[in-house]
Length: 247
Length: 324
Image 1 (cartoon, chains in turn brown, green):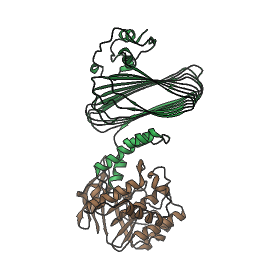
Image 2 (cartoon, rainbow over the protein chains, first blue to last red):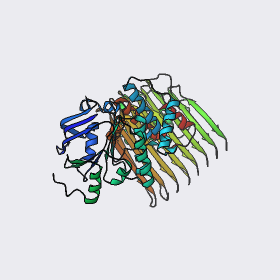
Image 3 (cartoon, chains in turn yellow, purple):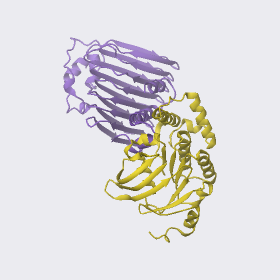
Image 4 (cartoon, each protein chain N blue to C red):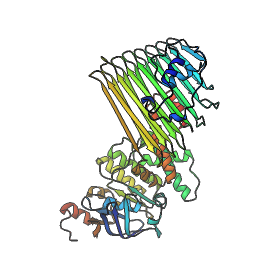
């Protein structure tokens, strides 16, 4: 499904952030990426989506055998990649639902399908909003505009639910969520997840993994995955931190 | 002093005249004036060529009175080369005035509006001109406001020629408020120039100015906004903000904020931003599968939408948002 091989990437001043990432994600898997601040976790999601602030120095990223790095950003998304960043961007003046509909229809156009009609989209939207226990106010607001941290994260998962990606890369989706919101968002992710899809979670805490059971846990430090294991690794990291790991 | 005498005294606009600093003055054809002025009004204090021009050309003056306490919606059609409109808005009246575009091609179109707003009256003045090819357009507004009156001026400009909108607003009594919101969506060789002078002549008056520009091609825009707070005019509140997005290498904007404050205990702010479309917002939209061209359009629309979204519900807001 998603295959990352020896991915290296740097920022404008030449500082290399990713120093050879290798990761294989198969359908039905949940991968948790943990690691100290500044290790390159957020950069990884942005690089595979093609954020212009990063330069790919080497390596490959393939989704279902297609080279993502050769695609435009919107093509990557329409091919089935979704990323949710740690701090979702606010876009005042762009209505949340209009934006979602535009994104949904862009994917349909990419796949050679006709546009969805207003009624069907409204139903789809309502169904997914219900799943995430979101009230009608979200429809009227600008994209993430004036939303609290928790509301933004919920709005991100709404987008994920509607766009139905193959691989979702969720960067610290649990940050800014209270206990109830964490449960709702995690349940939403579990509901969206299926044997044909995969999720990569970036998190600092075990609490999200109590709700979303990871298949694998990886430790990313200094731009490389230095350790991989099962769900028990997250528990050990929570107890002992990262200092015991030898690179 | 009549308008012809005064305009001849002032001479043609020059760039060294601070009212015309950014305007391509060479594009103004030298006018020929009639032998005598039909208006007997005294213009000895008027310094703006564009404010004098229609009167000096003996433009027909249309007077419209809106009675005390009444509610009126009006459309003013501009079809002549020179026009002069006088609006007298009665006490506590509510008026919504839309100025329609000049459909007739003239080498120059110059219109003057004298708007006298009575105590407690509320007026919205707006235009949302469709793209036109008028080569040179002047619109001058002289607005005088009584106590507790409220004027909202809103405009979208997206013509292909050269336009200049000048406003002199006189807030003459406590509680008067003036709000100006303008949006320029320009491309090609077009240019738009705004010159606002807002006179806070009484305590506890308020003015806000928001001007936004989306400039492409070789388009140019300028904003010359002055706020003058008179002696004794305490508790004045005034703000001015100009936001510009340059969509091309050759587009440009010039902004000149002026604050003349003759008393303490007032609050006046001004700001100016110039930039491109927000890169993070672009990334966000395209990372959801939206093609770059459509994403750019969405962001430009959002920028424009935000100019008028804060307006209260009414004909102006409806018309301007519809035009976007």
